[in-house]
Image (cartoon, one colour):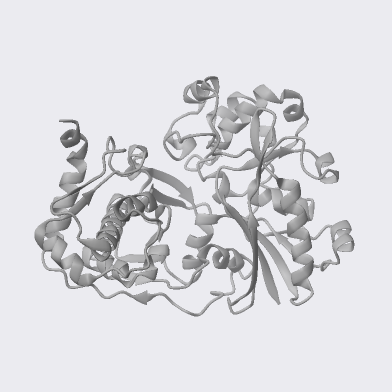
Length: 469
């Protein structure tokens, strides 16, 4: 028996078949296409659905698909009505959150969007926050929105298309949607004020079966009639849930890639500072999970001049740069990240890196410092788990262990943590899907690394003033 995981990323969508032992048996992917739709850019739900069902049919020829579950990127949802099930896609569009928004929408959401408790973050750029997207639809498509009966977040949209059952789910609504106040366990102020509460369907747990595949889809595409359709989950929460299923508690996760994302189940809500990129998220049980984000990938490429470099990083190169005081100060990108007021002011101080090996090594060191700062913001605790792109270079885990000597730092070398966490939902309550545990990282011996890190933190915090002077 296998689980079909539909992993919807902002750039690409993937369909994976994961076996009962956690092995990824097959995977397929396509681009997550965006098209123009009047005043909006929207995702091509009809095209994605055709690909999904045809690919499910192909995979079902070789695997017994017991369940289907969706994990998805945040800030995406669509209003629907029952008649939309008979259409290729809903009348209301699924908006692309990266598009620019009109000034009136920016100003109205700033006035009505509520505080940190309602949003779970600072006000983000573009069309992020689903409450802001609903304001836009209310202005541009009032009749279509008025006809809608349910607002479905992206994982629950796909569950609805396949099962016909509408549901809400806590990890997704709590992921900076602006629609739900997690700590108050209630709809946000803007939802109540604008009369949107009727859009929120009943809450279901991420691992619950909403039903089986709609009979007409099973017949049309030759798919298993008894395939369970699960509620689904937010992607970062799926990754976090995978570690919870392994038995970890009171821990922090650092996932690395374009974004460095830190999450912790032991961070007090009062500690979360939206001015430093911190967020409030949820685990599948509704527990508060503190979060923090910074664009590590932009920092890496600014230092190396490339998104990736084939040359390996070098511990000896790090030792030499630490000894001579070479460091990269944030922030090279357009987002302040962890250091307010530093956006676009990133720079290298001290003797410049000598060649590609030193440039790569400095970039890895810089991202390890940023990741450690994420942990410090969260109040990391004794257990830290690392996953994502940077762990492919062994230097990163060794540096993280050296920079956080008071914590046990583990490395999860398995890729596709989001998909595996989502597949775990189909096995909820039955122990971990995969028996392979993360391994303990060994700290690199870097003389004076703690002094260097303290200097970096102080100079990073002052970088705004120094560069403005």
